[in-house]
Amino acid sequence: MNPPAGLPPETGDGLLSERLRQYAVAQPEARAYVLLSERGHQEAAISFAGLHARATGLAHRMAGQAGVGERALLLFPTGIDFVVAFFACLIARIIAVPMMLPRRQSTRDASASILADCAPRLALTTSEVLAGRRGDIVSRLQSPDLTWLAVDSAALGAAAAGAELARAGPDDIAFLQYTSGSTAVPKGVMVRHRNLIANLEMSRAAFGGSAHSTCVSWVPLFHDMGLVFNAMRATYVGALCVLLPPAAFLQRPWLWLRAIHEYRGEIAAAPNFAYDLCVDRYRPETAAGLDLSGWRFALNGAEPIRAATLQRFAETFAPHGFEPSALYPAYGLAEATVMAAAGNRGGGWSVRRLDRAALQQGDARSAEPGEGGRLAVGCGRALAGERIAIVSPEDCRRLAPDQVGEIWLSGPHIAKGYWGNSAATRAAFRARIAGEDDTPWLRTGDLGFLDQTGELFVTGRLKEVIIIRGVNHYPQDIENTVQNCHPALRRDGGAAFAVADENGPERLIVVQEVERTERHRIEPAKVIGAIREAIVTEHEIAPAQILLLRPGSLPKTTSGKIQRGVAAQMWRDGALTLLDGG
Image 1 (cartoon, rainbow, N blue to C red):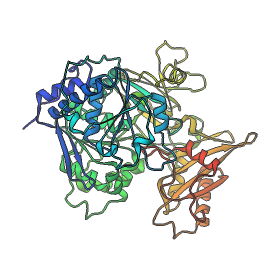
Image 2: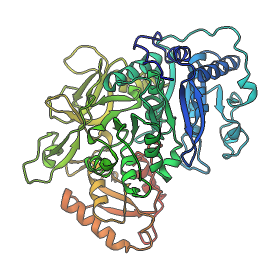
Image 3: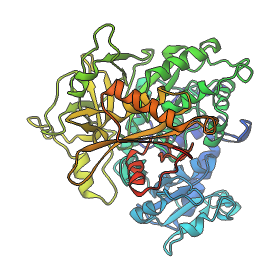
Image 4: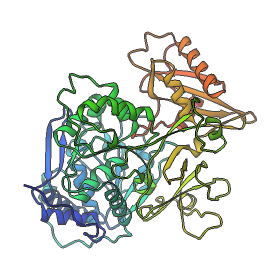
């Protein structure tokens, strides 16, 4: 059947659950979600009518276990059960708390702190998890006030609807999105129903979308990009979302591309490292017959975006029909629901080569011809209904175009604040620009600038800037220099950070993973020497210490961001896993 076009933006009274209900009537048999196996084969599927029926039944069962506004942990592997549980929470007016399944024997697991912070009443999961086949998660998260429900059990599937549930209001909290913890302890961002629907409409206005706009995603559903931009955006426009387990992508990235080909995916978003991984693992034999001509929107976000990554991906997959203009660098964060800036439909991406010395002084001036400079990738412009300002973090005054400052945001997609943390909420969500009206702004903690056309360029994190002898250095620049200086060093596997003694100046520390295939072939002393020489040559600073790490040991968030603060603390504690001889 040919599914009808997406509902108009105003349909659903500002509730995503209402849009699902209306799609369940308008296109009941159309597939809403498809789950692929670890090998890329279709494992399960659910229609819009089936999703609405399962979510409604679960919502009634949950309403008998928890009150309006109580919290429910969502502890699932990637799959349809997660989606059912999320919509059930929206329908039951119970606040969903998407959470990563705790890793076995992990020393950097945030689940305990999340549990203590939001005090959930319910924990929704699968029968497999409850049975302990993925580790003893239940006992690790056990609490006397926590009730566990397996959403795939026969009893829940047969739950009677009962009396109609009261509908949520636009200012009710839809879910808590815990921040990734790349720079601090995770905090629960309170995303209201109105924030969610506003951001989904912003992305629809930027990129369009209809029932034919299939999305293919491997990004975890507990991550804001995977949940909101990929999975929920598809439901918002009435389209199919194809889900691939994250581990499958990491092991075989071509499965993502093959699924985009097979399901004629139009839109797919992922962090920068995913595009690098696709290129690094490219093999002509696995890509035979691959057709990516229908992939119109390849969003790159959630971590620093490299111009070299975009260029490599475009060149590698051009023979397979991929158009370079389909690459869309974007900027987003949980506090803005997810998306905060993106390019215009058909606009492609832009790059500026900046003078390094000027950039260190806060001036985004283009480098002179022949000079190396630093490549900065444009992340698009403000979305419909949003305002972006670049503000001096010291005196809160608005800065002119091409001046580097903190990125501030204002608009209907900005979340309510942090759960149970009024001080952090005031600091981040209630900022005012000096000399202007009383409009509240969100302080993102990210550094960047707007060019003369209003395009946003992100240059780093405010709290991660390294200051050596009064000069600002961005850790991403140093890490990129390191990873380019020797082929044995793992891309996206290093961290640069500053440490200081109580009365001493800041010192630069660099830790860097070695590729698994190279760890027994290299001479660590020579590699460290190459790193030191490259940093001194390109940045005119000498690292106090360089450590080589075993592959996979650097702390990262669930979306692949380097946790520089955690790495620095592990360095202080002597807890980093060093390469033998490194």
